[in-house]
Length: 109
Image (cartoon, rainbow, N blue to C red):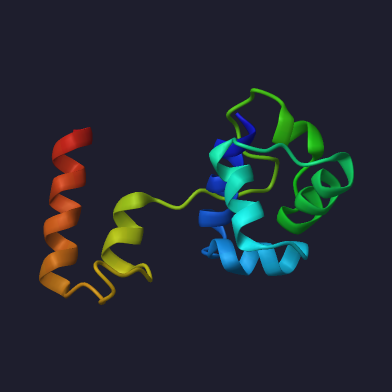
């Protein structure tokens, strides 16, 4: 679905909703409505979104799950151990990163 792809692409770029809204020239509440599926963008906004994320409009609107050609996926375990993120507004310790990694491995192994 469009809303899920939009959220995925934003998070993939590690942008906040405010940052994407600014890049698109709209308010954060309006962008939030796109991500929640409460409001659909018009064609001009779809063009802006596709240009911003460097994906086709077809990719945004179609029901395909694959990333556009050339997109790299991040390995979740590597991201948890080495990536830039916060938990409750603070950086995780090395011990917490290892614990999270173990949880992910337990779920998917």
